[in-house]
Length: 121
Ligand code: SF4
Image 1 (tube, rainbow, N blue to C red):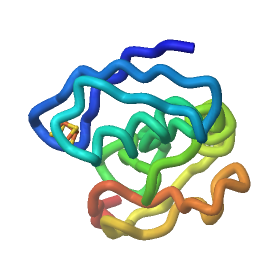
Image 2: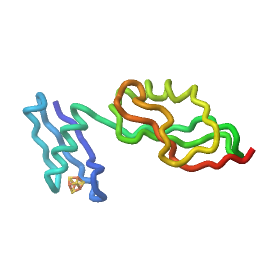
Image 3: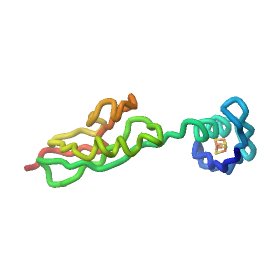
Image 4: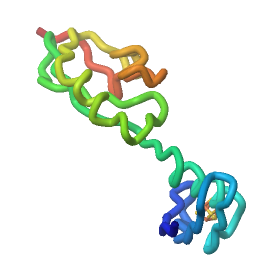
């Protein structure tokens, strides 16, 4: 199998070509450093992304609060994360990095507040 992967580890943004049959048979070209191969390995076999969303908040002037996953979650769990976050309603005050949902969708990763909002109402 062949896949084009752009490394986002640093601003160089190397465009790499990954050729593989399985995890132990991966050839990467186009990377300028070894981090590129590690990035390809994850991207081909266990892709992860930081989850971001907005949730409702009461008790302040804003109606929505931005939240994100503390660490990247498996890409195929993003929809499950969205489903869990959908029904959350926070109450101000909330501090940046407060945990909004523990272990979202069983990923082992917490959803945290991405900003601080004081109580105003
Ligand atoms: S392969 Fe190395 S140099 Fe290229 S983007 Fe990734 S980290 Fe940067």
